[in-house]
Image (tube, rainbow, N blue to C red; front, side, top):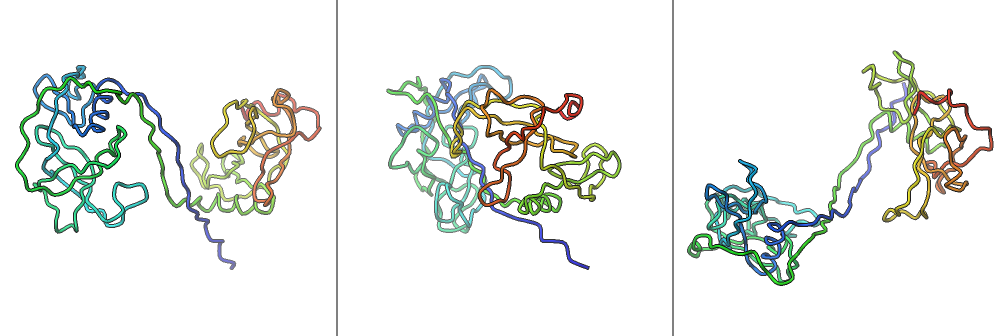
Length: 317
């Protein structure tokens, strides 16, 4: 018996810039970090929260009573990180630590620079190590470091006013992981490399899923019967894209559509090319144009056939 093909695996990176505006509390906190000042916010019960929040987590009351806390504090708990990842605060092994700053009642999560896990403990006294260049971000605290001095005085009122306040931030969100598509989609991808589109039929409801999922989401049974579909199909619905995506060399506007391949029971996504964007329509018959390396359809173009009748694809909208 021929052994099944090895399941595909590949590194995958998902990243995007996350942009948000800041209210008065977060603006004061981040601007304060730029000025080497750590601010918290006091609740109606007198508790000082660091980092500050705009609403009391217990009562949902609005919070605006800012106070300055110390830049020294105490480790409340920690975990050792022996292999820092790209983009983390330190390039050498360090501890992730929750630090309750002097004058605060809650703990701040940040990196603790220590020679090894044996040098870290709950109750360890630490202080802020400021970044050489500060821009108004949590990274203005480069890390914490062990400290043997006396605790700072209690929290002091602060009006939260600074010159040139920070009003917004842009943070790069990134996720690196190894993706395995599973046996069903591995077969699908290997077929695409041969310029074939293969789905799988549910033995119960007979619907053909493209791309295959390995199981029917409606019936809950395995889909092992492979079915070649297409290559032609019908546009069931579509949208016109007017915003250019980063790292995507496609001129706007362009059309992204749901395409029901002939023989498939589910529409898949695809870009429509070879026709002005304002001439794309529901029922348009299309065929794949393969990428330069021939591994997947780069886009779909009109076949020149008459449009499909609505009744032939209405169940696939």
